[in-house]
Image 1 (spheres, each protein chain N blue to C red):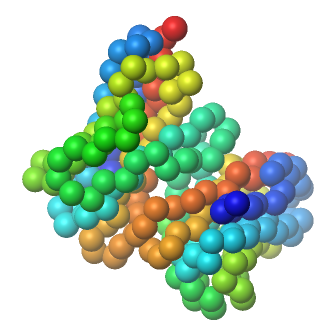
Image 2 (spheres, helix red, strand yellow; image 1 turned 45 degrees about the vertical axis):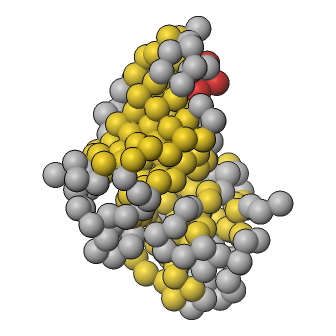
Length: 111
Length: 112
């Protein structure tokens, strides 16, 4: 099993709808989780971090963490065309504190 | 403004010609790292540094060198570049290992 897995997409979502991005990880002891947004040819930009089970909301973004299921997700409400990007999930491995990035999910918001 | 600065942004070079990509951060971060990003392969770590004079190999270190003589700077050196090192490179820094990473603008390198 890969350490951090994401569906590569593309995920197409109509403007104004909720986009749901998912990520699973293999290290059961991981404690820190991050979501980055990356526009084509640009650098990754941190949008959310989450450390505890449950939901964390920041504006239109909500991160959800379920450590028992080893699953972290990102919800984007009221999706806008400017949300079209690749979203990278990153997980801190418990065994050595290294951060491992998933390969990313391409999100396309349809106007 | 807190930032990670990479230079150059774009570089075309020939096989075997030594090059250096510079990286500097102004956030007093201890941890710095270099990644390459290739289509379908995601971000792969090349080298990292946990502090001054402490560097270690990441997942794809072959063909690269780094140094960390000062806390703010972490240059990436390609002694003899080859075409398979054509890629998009990112420098990143973090307060410490395992915390939020801040990325530089990226360097698109083409080796012909």
